[in-house]
Amino acid sequence: MKLLVTGGAGFIGSHLCDALVGEGHDVVCVDDLSLGLRANIEHLAGNDQFRFEEVDILKREQFRPVVAQGGFDAVFHLAANSDIPRGLTEPDIDLQKTFLTTIEVLNAIREAAISRLIFASTSAIYGELDQALNEDTGPLWPISLYGAAKLGSEAFISAFSACFSIQAHIFRFPNVVGERATHGAMFDFITKLRANPRELVVLGDGSQVKPYVYVKDLVAGILFGWKHGHDRLNCFNLGVDSATSAIQIAEIVRGEMGLPDAVIRYTGGDRGWVGDVPRFRYDLTKIHALGWRAANTSDEAIRVAVRAELDLHPFRPQGAA
Image (cartoon, rainbow, N blue to C red; front, side, top):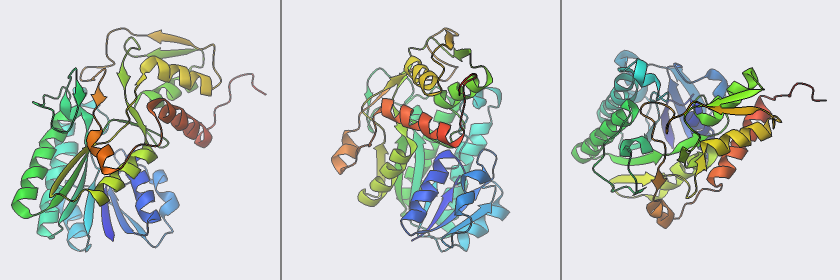
């Protein structure tokens, strides 16, 4: 197939591009590089099945011609503001980068008569609920601007699907870890210990517990759900049955970096920031019934991701041989 990936130079998007090219598809990656990095896709630069376009989706004169002239079979829409706390200081960032980019993608594929859309959504749409979250859970009251923008995007995708005969696959991601990440607890902990190997400051009280999925497992789940979900509108939670606390992540990172004596200090409170959902559980019955399960548990995902990151960017403790 010929496929378009928006946000394809980002953390998850670049891994998706790797997988799609690996399956033999022709892939066009568009990214404005506001969060994505050329380094994430430079290894694909010489591949005839891959092309990168530095494009701002919100600039129609840039984006619409790429879609209109591409002859695409499907569009994977991952472009969004992935820095959730940033919405607190820039309230318009999720309106622009997360919601309006989705509207632009929907209008572009409608005009180009592209009939398949795959959308990256999030657990943040559910808000803060003390129950296992399944695809029919509601009412939905997100507590972050990011979650609100993703929920609004899902609503428009549903309407476009019904009005313009677009088959849509919506995948709700949990916390994702792995190499090329730019945000998240694991990434932050590694960054902090590189800067100060003697102390690790953890936001909150460390009791936050969430499911973490390894990025390559997530991509495998996206492709599996896309290939096996045949409804007009498909919606799946993707993730793992297990969960990992912030303190467990801190201890795994500290151990893998060879810093067992680094002091872990907590800032206090039951969450890391305003808009953070400190704990949630997914009901994965729907995707499991379809035949997919993640290869790694939540703890395994953290450890695999930490090791992969340290392989890419080695850290040598002071005094090590």
